[in-house]
Image 1 (cartoon, one colour):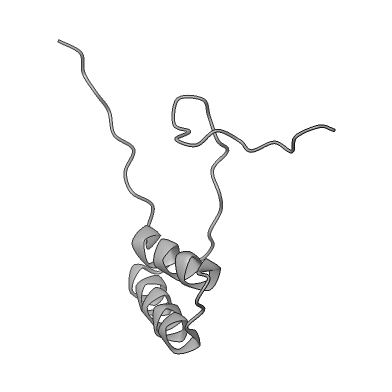
Image 2 (cartoon, rainbow, N blue to C red):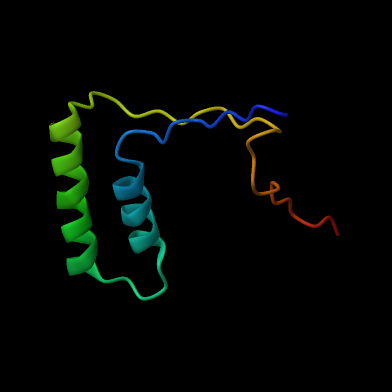
Amino acid sequence: MEKTTTTPQPVCAQESLALLNCVAAVRYDRDRCLALVDALRDCITQKRVKKFSLAEPSSSTSTEAPKSDPKP
């Protein structure tokens, strides 16, 4: 039987993702996004986060292929 390992979810990942999706939405709702900023800030202070960083993508964890520009 194969043993599977899961990567733990980064701290405040849900709040961060919700905020990023809010500001990227076609119909930008400033009030909603500001509420999400507050939620992220609460999470950060509660979990005592000092700094965020992005992990280097690896072929085994990537779920989306990189997008390349078509060449003329």
